[in-house]
Length: 252
Image (cartoon, rainbow, N blue to C red):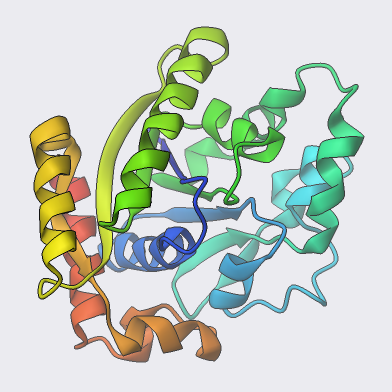
């Protein structure tokens, strides 16, 4: 059965796209069939996967509006060995255009139904906002992964996100659950980071992934080459961390 995982956090700059791209590549490297859906108008997951967002003709925008199917929008990503549904700035207008659509919160879910048997994992890179695009991602997903930095404001935003997930579960997607919380850009020398990490583990227990993603230069520079870090520097700590995360997910 296909597992659909929404990677979301309304706070920007916490490693959502980095996680989406590198987890997709790591799962694919483990022999799984993976589709990455870029649901962010910034199109960073598209660029980080080596696809030029300026030149793609069919994107997730066309899928949400019903102008194209997933089959037409998906592109192969030989660098990461996974498939991609790209996005660009056109997607920013989708929210306004979908306002009067029937089942506007389920557009992505309905579109994915036609290709689910083609993949073991579908990862959805959600935008840094609790908007209609994110709602589409949460309605389509079986579970949510929450990347977060170990800092004070991240804890404050986490409670808002958990409440949003509860509302989505009550009103739209009763099977939605939190898959796990992923600590990203972690610096073990930072005392505050250690304290926040301890609080997360106390409050969420085994919902916190054992794998911790370190802050590394290789992870930061890989998108500039249009490559997952696994194929930019496979021996780096960042690449090994995402491989460990993939193993942890597969063994769950």
